[in-house]
Amino acid sequence: MNDDKITQAAQQLATDVTPERDLWSGIAAAIEAPERRRWTPMLAQAAVVLLLVGASSAITYMALKDSNSTQVIASPEMVFEQVSFGNRHKLGPAFQAVRDELAGDFELELLRLSPQTRQDIETDMGSIHAAINEMNNALEGDPENILLQKQLLRMYREELALLQRVSGLSRSVMMRNDI
Image (cartoon, rainbow, N blue to C red; front, side, top):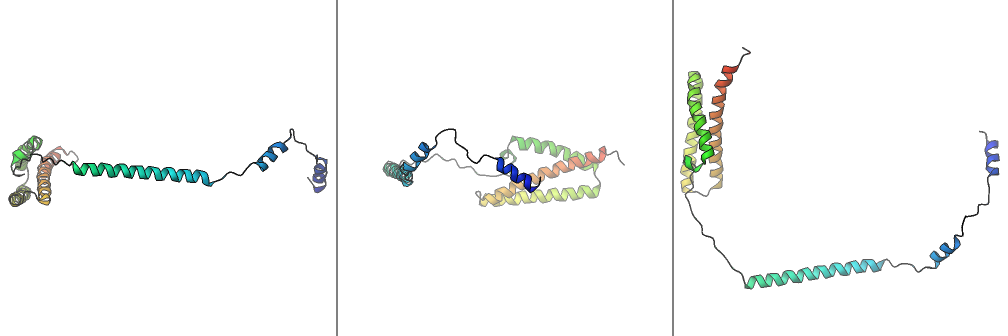
């Protein structure tokens, strides 16, 4: 479209549009209505917050004041047992069962390995047992030492892992069919 056609189309548009209903009454009412105050709701909220904080503080004070005057201290009976992870019966029946099964397989599987490999594994197992004995001796002097207890449990896990690796090692060698 060129400019002349656009101008002609614009001139044909109605310049006087009358609303379908009288809008002046709503506009006049909005102009004459009193302006709403913004501070009133905020002040009411602040008052409620102060009231809640004050009430909770008063209740807390009363509860603590009453509990201090009627404090009862109960001391439970304590049974002290010597802690020793070295005794296998202290490690639990699940550990014993797994260890006994792996130890039986360990001896059989060791016989199937070469002498050099067998000696290396026995040296490793000896080191683990020596570390377990040292930690048990140290725990006799300091039975509440958490670090020693954690290290001792880690050594028992190492023992189980070695027993399991040896058992799996000879089985995997025997089961290989890609040679």
